[in-house]
Structures are given as C-alpha cells and as structure tokens.
Image (cartoon, rainbow, N blue to C red; front, side, top):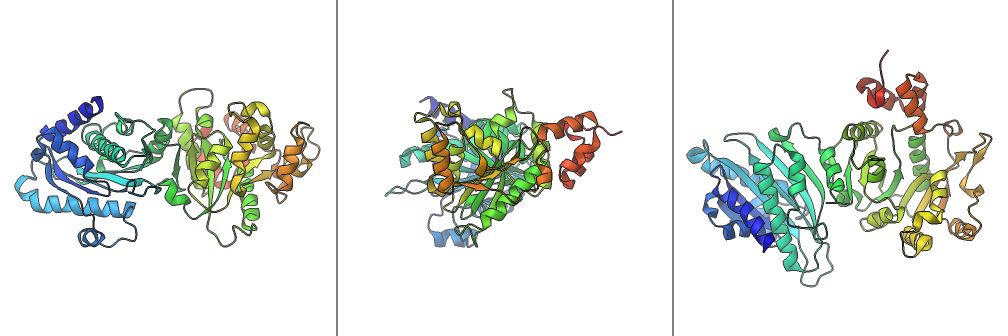
Length: 467
C-alpha cells in the first residue's frame, strides 16, 4: 500500500498541475504507466492520448518500419512522433499555457513460456516552458522480477518516477537519477543507461550520470565511448569479442596503451576471435574511483575519462571488484571470446588466498567462475624488483601450495604471455607519472601518449602548473 500511495501521489501531482499535457504510448507490457494516472484521478488534465500499438504492422504504420522493436531507435521515433502530433494538433488552442510532452516505452516483459530477456527502453520528450524547444531523458531498463505482473508493476512505477522527476526535479539531474527507483529496489529493476539531452540539460555531462547509476547501485556497470556518448552495455557488447584492461588510468600511460595493443595483437590470433568484431575496454572500478573515501571526485573522474577518450578507448565503469564478477557480467552479454588484460603484479595478487576469503569456496570457486567459457588472461611482464631483468608469466612462481593450480591454468592456456611488449616502458608507473606532474618535472611527458600530454597541459589536470 505504501508503494501504491507514494506513486499515486506523484501521478496525482502531475494530473493536478495544468502545465503538463501530452501522450503516453506504451508497447510490450500493457499500459502500466498510463494506468497510474487513471487510478490517481484527474487524468483528463494530463492525458491528451494513451495508446499501445502492439501489432507490428500497426506500429510500423504509426512510427515507421524498424529492424528491432525494442530499441533506442524505436523509442525515439515514438517520442518524436507523439510530441510533434501534440504540438501540431493542440498548439494553436492551448500552446501559450501548456508544456506538451510525450512519454513512451517499448519493452519485452516475461513471456508466457518464460526464459526470455526482460528489458526495454523508456523516455520522455517534453517542453519545459510553453513553445520551448524539447528536452529529453531516455533510459534502458532490465526487469528482474520472475513474475510478469510484478514486472509490469515495476515498469509502471519507474515510468511515473521518470515523468515526475522530469517535470519537478529537472534542475537537479542527480535527483532525477536518484528518484527513478523510488518505492522499488535494485532487485526488481536495473537501469544501465540514462541520457539527458536538449535545452534544459545543455550543461549535463552524461558520463557523470552514467557514473551515478553505478554509484547508486541502479546498475553494476555503465559505459561510454571515446566521444563521451553513453552506451547501452548489452548493445555494445552483443556479438563482440571483448578485451578489457582494468586500471587506475591516473593518468593513462604508454604502458597502459601498450598493454592493450599487445593484448589485441595476441587476441586476434586466437582462432575463436578471427574475423569477429573486437570491443576494447578500459575499466575503472568504483573501488578505484573512491580511493580511500566514500565519495568520488568527479573532476578527477572526468579527467581520466577525457584522457582515455583522447586515446580512442571506450570506458567501462563497474562495481565488480572481483574479476570473476566482471567476467560473469560480460559472459552474460556476449557469446564471443573474452580476454582480460593485466600486469603480472595483478596476477600475483590473484594468487593470494586472502583475496578470496569472501567466497564460500575460496580461491577455487573464484577461479572456477573466472576461467569458465575459456576466458584468458593476457599478462604483461614486470621489471624485476632489483631492476635487473624482466619477469614474465612463464617464469612466475607462486606460493608452493598454489603452484600446482598455477601450473594447471598455465598448461590449459588460461595465461597468455605478452612477449611483444616494449621493454623501455617497463619502469614506468602511473603513480610516479602523477608525482612528476604535480612537482613540475617535465620528464612525465615522455611517459604518456602525446594526446594525453596535450590534454593535461591544456586543462591543467592532476595539479599540472604552467611555468
């Protein structure tokens, strides 16, 4: 009852506000959003039209043909069509006092037989002021309930939350994101992409909004491309072989880029990868971004994101500190080969049993989950602590009790030695580069890609000061 009461109050507040008037168009899980407004009462003050074009031929006749009906392209066609109709049909009679809007969703809920992926796209396109240029919020949701009726209820609540936030909290985008799961839990709905655009959101950086999805637990991951455009992870990963490097990238060094390039060269030689599109990712974990505090320094995050973008790399933000959880996420979204790129020190950390005590089966369970489906680790060598010589994965020894496990994994090809490395890069460490930037020691410039140097100097990242 508490859920219904709160959601009904939000719907009623919209119904009683004379500014908002528009259309709710829903495909795939009933008219669950519109239903809340009818239940709340006074819906005639808000709804010009509600509709569901379920039949594909009918949907195509209204919104144009589409290769995929549950897609961002279909959602945006729906939003554009419905808002344009409202302005065209009603603008002359009530446009001076009305902010027109169009809400739409296109989803696939649990089918009668079950077993299908339950997800969809949802969004609102609206005028913040009469005669204003439209602004837009779109998001991708995954419904996690096992029961179709519960999925429909959750979808309706998220839709009401989105409309309420767009109309009454749009000046605080952080609050828009935070309010989406009001009266729901992350066990019922996952939101793995959100994008703001239009005149009301011209100062919004969607990378920050992507970060907040993970911070708040609305999603385990978020992703954006080198151009800063947010990506829907499942769409980006689908049918791709995936190569991912985890790091701090503070800043990205020539070592980071060489690791990716060396691993990609080896990755492409894998018969299971040959001819397949490859998605290369740089992963930042929330634990790394938080460092020793509970908060994320957004300027520091954006600096790293900008620098990785300058290197042409797609960025993945995850809340999966354990490698096996990252692997499980990727394996659920692509059937192609997955490779994880890491330095030898990180591999040695993986063979410390104390790092796996949180798992019931300890290191054996952790590795069993990680290496299923023939996942491989692409291991970059390290300089010997003495500075004399190089240590590779093939020469590595671990704790005597774990050496048989190491040898077994090595023998089955789970470790790929990146012997195509640049030896002159091995002494370079990110923390040393960071120290030199802050101290005014210009020698750091040779330790990072030229694009990174230019951007650090231009924007004074990481405490860089001009002479």
